[in-house]
Image (spheres, rainbow, N blue to C red):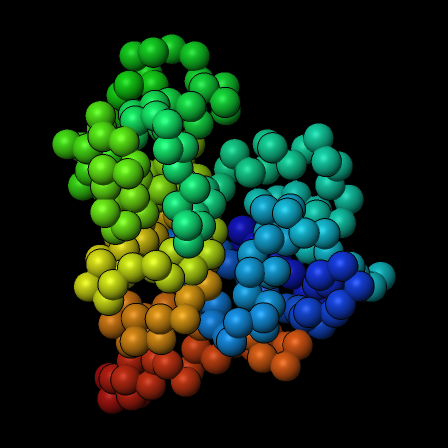
Length: 237
């Protein structure tokens, strides 16, 4: 299991945001986290990549990619993050350098040294997201959807076991948003899990997945509410 949370509490400073959290993710799963602004979606994601600490009782469990987050040391966080890709709503590309140099910067920072291998990996991920021809473009020369595709390419660089996407379609028009969600859904076919927070509820019908809802300080699995069509088909067969 890639994520195994049992009975944990999530705080923002002294405010309890989510209580008694049970949340799981496994290889190849496509997981939505929905809920109103301030309901705890981003806070939950931040605990996964150790941007936010976890509070837990004695019988609680918090494991991500085989690490016990309750005992993880700060110096061990970079190695954990290297095994996952993180995508943000505002892309967070470096605006003073080209797409190629944005991706090269990440690879160099995570220990890649051989130029030929770096170039090959950059070409591979740009091909995966359909952006090969934009390799020498600067971020401001790209549309929002194109920048998000580059952000996804960046997340794929180190062959992640899991991608964490915080509102990745929040700044995009509906058609572009659909293309981004499809791309993320397709990535799960390689075995990489995707955990994505979203307000884009129509996407849950178009690209079904596991659905968790954050509401009133609690997170619940509400998949059956959004996969009714799939369930009725299964019952008929």
